[in-house]
Image (cartoon, rainbow, N blue to C red; front, side, top):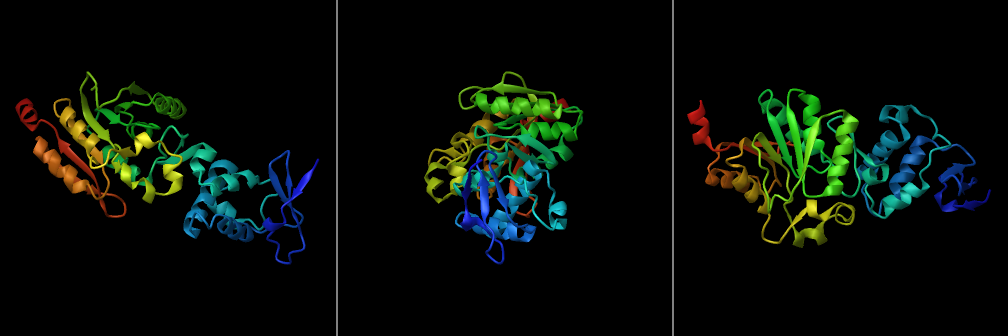
Length: 313
């Protein structure tokens, strides 16, 4: 077996030991034990050009839990780092900007571990707040369609919380729907998936609830965004043409008006009021905005076709 000396990676306090890389096992091994504190400090330092200390620490936590099977509490109680902790290749990929969730192939969302890859957006924590709102406000036995479902995190998580619901997920991306179908099977949830571009088509059946967190970032904002988002996550799930941040919102609220009872959106915090005003102008009733866990308004809901609803009551 041949070894490549990586002396610059050694963090031993007295600088007398060498770090060696076992090329056939992708594993760094130290000739003296390294404490978890030393490892954490070295990890943060190695990623400092791309991530601040808080972000680097969070990436470490995610990797330890998702790939190494080491919880935060267990890591804090450890004196030294396990000798077989493989991370040399991982650090290089992280330093290049690749998201940890794509490296591990999984992401936590609503206490569930979803499969992810570059064909789907990495589920965001704030979207969990939307799922919790749907859990609390969706009538019993309702049908729910998620437009732009990606990994399927919204309908699948909702179905795990509310087994009485019927859930659908729609996306124009076949690779994304394949990931979503894998997650539904993994979570043992019945979810029907539809491949469709809602800018040119619309589902034939009606739903009690339609929900969406559609693309809203103008293309001109690419240069100001983090590389680990722009370079790795699917552009079609993020960006819209310049000067059209509400392109998908407008299409969905107009088309859904006669095809659902309630419409729910997740929005950019700068667009919440505009989306709400446009829903009112389109004819939605009881339009309401909701904050995320940080207290910032992020979600909008409304009752569609209120005249028909009043006539049916």
